[in-house]
Image (cartoon, rainbow, N blue to C red; front, side):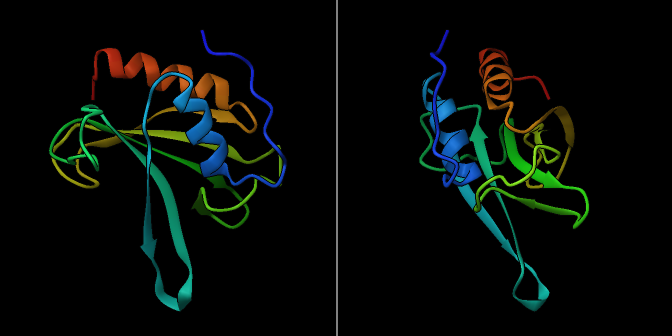
Length: 128
């Protein structure tokens, strides 16, 4: 089991998650969706085939992000500021981006250890 990690509070959610996943030997990739008005959503994608340079969305995959309820925002590109934000793990079945996706696991921040353990378990037998 991975060790308990200490992360500076200035670290982004992506940096925190990437470090926690790396302890399990898991590689995550940052992805961005630009929105109208200059806003953006950001998340990490973890492919079921960890040998891919970037996850093939035609195979099972996981999307990981922090959800901020008051602003209805998903992101990983900034530091976590509220313990009321939540990590969300969305599993895709490989039918393409946003196809066959469902939320499989959530945890209040800073619960990244539980999130990383869930993803590591999913990678041993990817089940959409």
